[in-house]
Image (cartoon, rainbow, N blue to C red; front, side):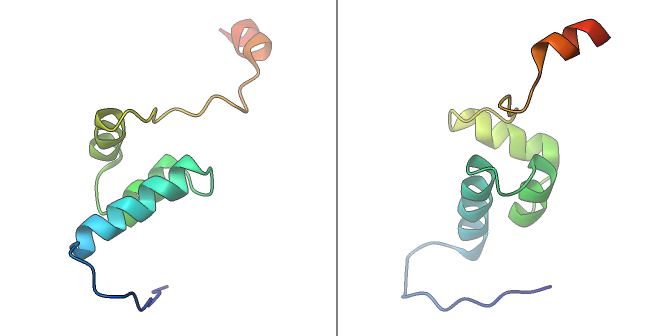
Length: 73
């Protein structure tokens, strides 16, 4: 599926726009790390490193049940 969006002229490359979109979608919890990395055009490892470099954790903890996880360890 492809999406076409018309934007006003900006001095940002298409690759940078894809990366910024992927980061925002990931931060907002709308896509997974894997999907965000796919949108950005990077491997999951490379995308996670980019997130870390920008001060964003690639790991989302909000749905983690620590008691359950510890009992399964």
